[in-house]
Length: 446
Length: 169
Image (cartoon, rainbow over all chains, first blue to last red; front, side):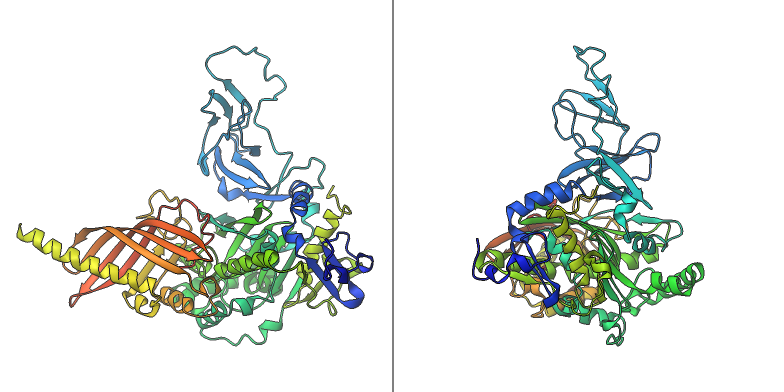
């Protein structure tokens, strides 16, 4: 429906491919209609063109360290079994019994030689092969000669340095091509630990009545950080012993990394459990953290070592994997349950074999900001509720994403690789430009 | 009634009165007073949902919801009183219901207590309910109780529909 307000954005002058965005670079305008967040038609397109075509994060190798380990997980609308078979090979299966379809593994995690369905007794090996059709017989020997009753594998499964991704499109581009320049940022995370990364046991799960894209917007939205989170921000500075942050507030950058991936980095010294000690971490952890910093500089050289040790970063791997490397090293995925509800899973990471003392610093630092009872996430979720309330109780509206547009760099006119100042919004525009290209049919990800 | 039973019932009564007072401070947003109930080495812990052994699980074993030492529980209380702590500004209406208070052990100064807890949170016409047991390690000096550790083990198996845990349990 055209309201007086939408009429102000004639599609003819917009560079966007869909009716949900309005982009006019000559006027430095980049606006998103609220219907991008609450239109059921957009949501259906996202399911088909984004969640069933993009590479989606499944899990980390450390979650299934031993043969026959498995976890079950919702990924892009499907429930999957992510496991290591008895030979050590990693699989991703749709989590249902091939006979009549009930969910097969009901535990969140475990270690199993076989998956058995309690209904008629069909049994599958950890490699997904059908082992038994129950004890009552009646099937001919050739029932599974083509393997059609084995557990069904997701079409594509691959990993980058231990981070496993799936893709429901057989013809999708390979994972490394898809990841584009995020690989360099993921390296900065994985390289923190010589013995490798591990996911700490226990995931946090948060729910909200907002659209899932509010979360992807939020994690690269630097602009809101010192404002919405003023109470946390003041507390963080107190934890450092009161450092002067005025210089660092304007340092760093926000950028697109290609294919809709986006990130920011900034050197605010508010404490990094890996190598940025602050007084709140406690005196006894100081020597360990300082030694770790020296090690990183030794191993990777002054420049890259300092980048790993000292620089905070958030990244969204398009569409919905959020990587944060600041007060904690964490991964999140956000998925829509409906157009108007989301679930966010949070995992925090540490180094394999790191001292208990460092693990303690890591957990406490993570919980100070992150999670259902952190000092920041609940305030973001409160704002998502207020944004959603706005969709339904005020007229149709266009939302502004133009901050920094006049000063950013857009290499070869490709907005998915634009970059600008830390407190600006090049990174959001990179993400949304890819969303627009996919929903507009210009990007098939094949 | 034996002497021992009489002593227990007096202690039982005193401890119930202390826990009710704590609940009342939380319900009436007197959080400065609430944090002063803790010892200098006091802790406020909420173990992960669905933990097999929430009463004993260690804070580095599996990711907790809350691991507050005295400094962070103080900061939590202080932050929640601010107008810019938006998840609770404007404030929810909350109500702590305490029952089944049981003294597990006591040696005169150190007392271990458990109770059942239901917390109702009303916000924007919606109700969130948090249900669980609380394990207190209390210390008694000069007749006054202080909390050395408060561990709230939730029965909720997910935070749906609560979304988050923005209040103090």
